[in-house]
Image (cartoon, rainbow, N blue to C red):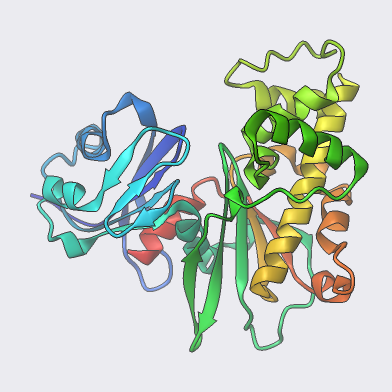
Amino acid sequence: MSMVNVLAGDVGGTNTRLGLFEKTSSRPRSLAVREFATLDFPDLPAMIVAFLHAEGQGDAKVESACFGVAGPVLGDVAELTNTPWRVDAKAVARGLTLPSSRVRLLNDLEAMAYSVPVLRDEEVHVLQAGRPPSNGGGNIAVIAAGTGLGEAFLHRVDGRFVALASESGHADYAARTERDITLLRDLVARFGRAQVEHVVSGRGLLNIHRVTHTDACAAGIDRDDPDAPAAISTAALNGRCPGCAEALSIFVDAYGAEAGNLALRTMSTGGVFVGGGIAPKILPALTNGAFLRAFRAKAPFERMLDAIPVKVILNDEAGLLGAATFC
């Protein structure tokens, strides 16, 4: 029977990544990673069995396991917010024949936050260099739009970082401009309450697209297509549809504004990291200045926000890496 240090997972509303890692003194070394469609399996233990067998590790003895889950973690259980899945750490431990204390669940953004201190320079794109504290201190915030919107931050405690989870993506959406107010009215009429995630997420981009298209979409976007958010972004970046371009513009402004809100709430002078699947795909729209203008437009705190480093995480396995780092 082989021995594996760490089994880690990034459990998302659409896809889940599982990985085997070797613990090292600096950064966990990846041994094997696979991605699965979450709802192709009844639960996480069944997916883990399939993963270990696919990697030829069906009889491997795992020393510890940690999973970032896209939903609130209460005790040893997590309910995914956007997918009808329940993750039970004790059930996972039984499947791996581990003591329950050796299996940990984190919120997915909490897990991603733990990757930040070990990310390499080539794994981030700098939007704003800022002026971080000279002693390397300061809190760090992470915001990530994908299927939904997640937020977390790393609080510096006695020289080390401790990640704190949140469900801030479900807080109230704050309209800032007349076009935001038009969107807000539509969201309230449809959902009863406008959440930040109704705007800053893949589904949010669909909500914005609905408002910016009183006529047919010039790019022929079908909002019922699972790939519609990516198609809207592509049409916007390629200049194929004015309505799609307007939708992406509203999205980027809202993303930057919420990142600035998070920086203020957490006093993240050490940096704000933008993760998730959307940001790397729309990098040209994030680097044209609109994101940072919205990020900084928080009078009277513009100078403070101008000093905060802002970086896009390019490593699409950051959540998995963070779970392995925590384990």
